[in-house]
Amino acid sequence: MADESLAQSSPAGSKEDGTEQVQTPKHPVEITEDTDISTLSAAQVYELNQARNLLDLTADVHRPLIDRIVPISQLRAEYERGSPSFVQQINYLESQGYSSLRRTRGDGDCFYRSVAFAYVEKLLHASDPSIAVASALSTLEATPQILESVGFEKMVFEDFYEVLEQLVKNVVSAEASVFDQKLTDEMLLDAFQSPEKSNSIVVYMRMLASAQIRLDPDNFAPFLFHPELGEMMEVREFCEHFVDATGKEADHVQMTALSRILRLNIDVAYLDGRGSTGQVEFVKFQPGETTEVTASSPICLLYRPGHYDILVKSVR
Image: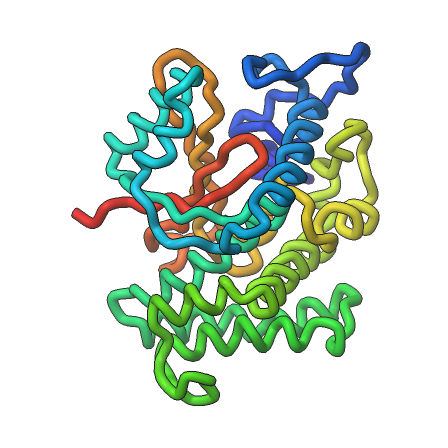
């Protein structure tokens, strides 16, 4: 039987209740800046997101892959002309203590890059980094064998794995560090702004999500839909086209898979302009087990149609 927690993992744009169904539009729909996103089908939202990703990639080629933290007021200023529902939701987030965000480049890999950065940063700022790193490594070091078990060749992924593993180890040890010192916030940012290192980690994170889906087909298969056509896909086909390939937006299936294989709590705040109350829906992705990892504070991302950034909560 399919895992009920994946009900929220139906095609792109669905939420926790899993009620949205994919429908292929019967007639062309003109989508403008004034279009209410809530009136679009999942396929139309996907097409809009892919178009925005392309525009972001061409318009923001000079934007860092991961940027420095900025006040959320900067984001609000971008919506103050003509998007009152978004402004209302940003105000709600700020009232809940989310005062800042860390932007990522809109290149289709923003979910994976955001999670990877926040994953290492969380270890760096843990109350006891030694324990946090030991726990993370116990999970991370098991993943190469998992990848091999589902058909990935070691020679293909080992270099990508080593980049991530070294960053995690450098949180508590200067051994093998090119800087000959333990990881700092500035070094972490430099690593993720380096295309070679940052993209290597993104590729490995995608492989992890793909491996988890392939490893557990009975649970994931009922939720694997083509984001444009709304047709069900085979596990291998879905992974090869939408998970392994870079530049493809992550859906709830991929978020669930990555959360499970790395045993991470991931909360996603949906800034989508829906509703009239201004409240923001948080969708929670959890490994599905009660452990110290799941009890810890989650990685928090901010979703806007077609894009993910890291949401930062004030320390009180």
